[in-house]
Length: 224
Image 1 (tube, rainbow, N blue to C red):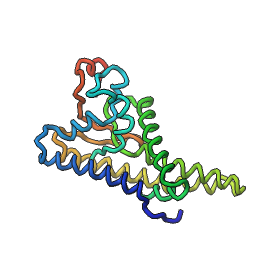
Image 2 (tube, helix red, strand yellow):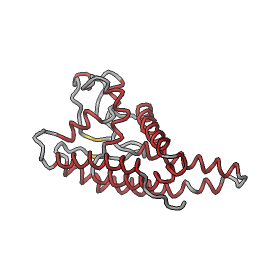
Image 3 (cartoon, rainbow, N blue to C red):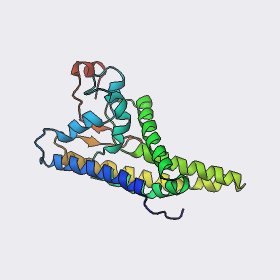
Image 4 (cartoon, rainbow, N blue to C red):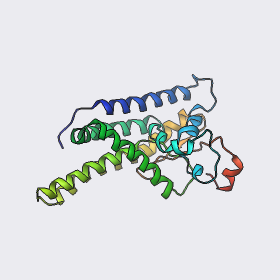
């Protein structure tokens, strides 16, 4: 796939994610007079499956907004860097194909879909943060277009199927690498000891962070 320039929508998304993580890093260094700053941000903006059961939200509409807000948080510098590199590598091709508005539409729908998938298939009440759900939505769109184009041109589907390998291999290597140094970085920088683990590609559970909700209800649902 030939390279595409970085588009303005992608720059805005990357800038927003970087600024948020920068604020979290400053909080980890104790520059804000807010105890457990990162954990509190996760409590208010991460994706908590328990809120879909019987946990009490911290503010109105949190149960709905978390389907979007989790995608702009990350579990540390490793997690952010890997996702931003992937966003940079995919955004140009999608924008060149459908334009900026539809690129943002696909990105937003993919974030929502990632949250929905985590809500359905997660076997834990730990929170999820990260843009991986949106990124796999972009990759899925590229692969779908490749299939359709090759089918219409009667070139067969196998060449299109081969383009899965660069994306899949890259994500496997980076997610595997992140599970080791990423854990150490976050554990060292987070005052509450939260540690990320990318157990499946579209989710990043944050271990140790607890929501400021009704803790009796958390006990009822066996929050980890």
